[in-house]
Length: 517
Ligand code: NDP
Image 1 (cartoon, protein in one colour):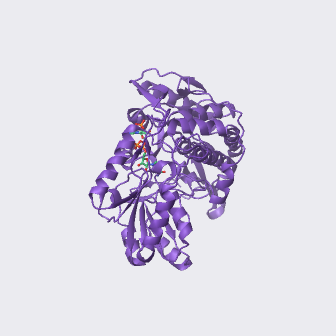
Image 2 (spheres, rainbow, N blue to C red):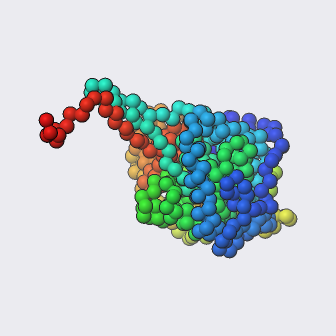
Image 3 (cartoon, rainbow, N blue to C red):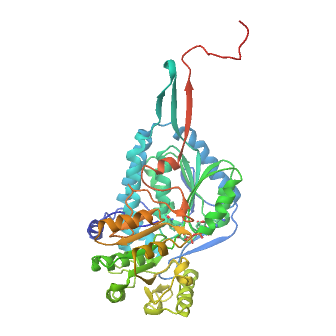
């Protein structure tokens, strides 16, 4: 998921918007669970996790890994709240969901700062992320009153009612790369549809979701409608196995998604799975080269490359591969790496030491498989207070081939691989040679070629002449092993509701089995 909520022109405006500095966000001191309208301590924690600022490695918080009783208490609270929340009209719920969107806007600067401290991404990106969260609550708040069913006329005045009903308590589990956005993309539609939610953030980035729960209470959302349990994968498992949870909405890696699907299968819980990808970006030789370079930057180096929809397999038509590569390398080496809270910074810190080491290992292995490392791919040592942060310079590998590990596997870091191609037929075939299908990009000035290519790419989202733009109005979800279900758009409503058919008989029953007369 990501990412940019709107078109680049509006994004650059956002960069200079004077956001309000007023804030009610204050979550760093704990407690870190949020149940029944209050921050609460864990009752049966299985140890603790140190939450670090990735740019400095300084500790921001020490959170308990919630156990079975914590999850159970949160689910009980959400189950109780469901009785009255689901009975409100869509309009009544929508007003409260929209109110939360306004609260987010009011606290945008504070939430963006908190996200940067906890995730390491540059502040301008965090502001866009938080803006997209507000968009999501305003969008689903706005459409809550339009969620409706059908009346179907049947013979002799009998009729059917098809009601669209909420599911119950939804369990949400999120990743660390877009912490508040991942959470908002689940909470907003789930609540608008009349469900309640227990959400478990990633243990690396637990803070902004907690702030969201506080703002939800301020916005007037009744207690228990949105609860938070902090913890590790084990805590997530408890949520997946809880018998009173009707659905799991998950964002994370493909492997964890498969594990969750198995857990959910035990009692046939519904699932939405937003998983990883290894996405193609196709650059035809008739494109606008500057836009293609900009697109390649957006496709690879937002959020330190930690973006599920990134287009890291950069297919470039052979006649322009040298020109494109020169321009792409030039733009990449000019990216400003540094203090994520500095407005001038374009590349911040990788989320953790473990993840940075994994990314660097992929680059080392990739170079061992023949490519030429044109730029980046090194740990950047920063002056105090960032000397213990994990900053990686954006990396471009060329001379790549489709079988390389770095081309086949999701690195989830700032690593672009350049893959030359000759024909349209060839590139479409190669682009689809992956078990994943989250997103793809096409740069061309030939509209017919763009549509032909888009029609044949096996991906849930295709960007033509842009990349990583995700307006809330469009569905976002994966094909193949990149997921099940979608987030955003009116289509998300299907994922958080179920249909109930009621047949209304208006006449005496004509029953061939009734023999008494
Ligand atoms: P993980 O799959 O490791 O973790 C995701 C969440 O699941 C975390 O909250 C984690 O807890 C929890 N978890 C781990 N194991 C289990 C389990 N067995 N049962 C229940 N919950 C569990 O992913 P990452 O956090 O590392 O995120 C990166 C991945 O997410 C990438 O593959 C990326 O592509 C994908 N992603 C997909 C998006 C999309 O919209 N398609 C958007 C963003 C990311 P904890 O972290 O506390 O251990």
